Length: 337
Image (cartoon, rainbow, N blue to C red; front, side, top):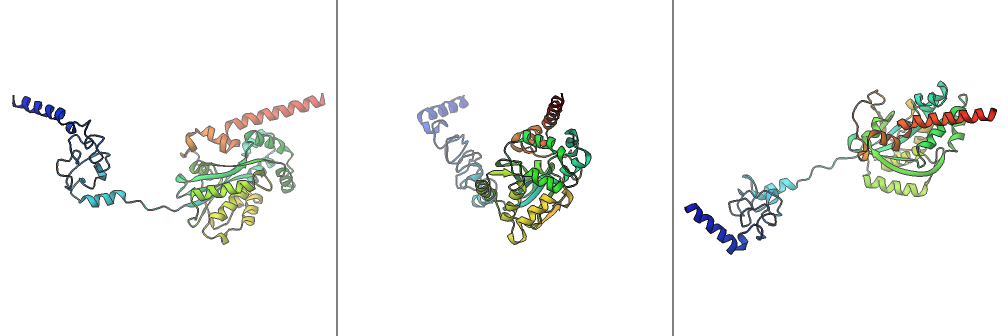
């Protein structure tokens, strides 16, 4: 009987005094900026003690409730001390840069295109694609690249035509052929771990660099405005990478863009070295550890990522090579008929 009376009184209070109703009371329930989730009226949320008590609870999302409530707090420490602990920011981690080199034309693919063993070896060792990674670690890094906007079909055609490669004078043939590879330039980004895991050789700066992601984006925008036409000989990924590296290293005097470009374009893969205060680091490809996991950029699966960022490594490239080889054979047959 007594419980029934108490319940009736409470119900009467809710109707008689709407501030007791959690739905109407701006100082209670989820609408309470002082209490958050406060099931009872007042300023303390679930806290049963006065708002100024350091022993109150007040869990939730209210501006003055839960972990952020300087007036109720949580535990035995003073509320002000708890607030300082919550807002304490982690130390800023410094960025490094990696310059990574991709083997654009794997030897196995080149032989399928009809190149002999020597031609395939030369292409694999000398024609490479360069990326620059920025971040505290490879797993947190973003990779930047400058490339030809025309894409996979163009590179497949280039590979089939490389059957004319003069193995006695590869440099002269390479320069003449590279000068004809041109089109729209574009600068894009990929996941750092993805690029690192598929690169043949990588170099990392010995010291932290002075660039943030915004700095690299700003540099890239300006660079593209003055280098909007890609040319494999005179305006390529290596030149962009070396200029970006010089822009960002701690001491620009340690980075000569001309030397960096020449080393990466004219040396074989194992002899390539950009200098610029960098040191070589092991990659999964170099260690034949491609089974290790890596990050796929922007939620794409691996095949989509390869087609976008490393087209000649994607399964689709083999199909295109076979189609081009067959087309060339049919054209030759028709010409002699």
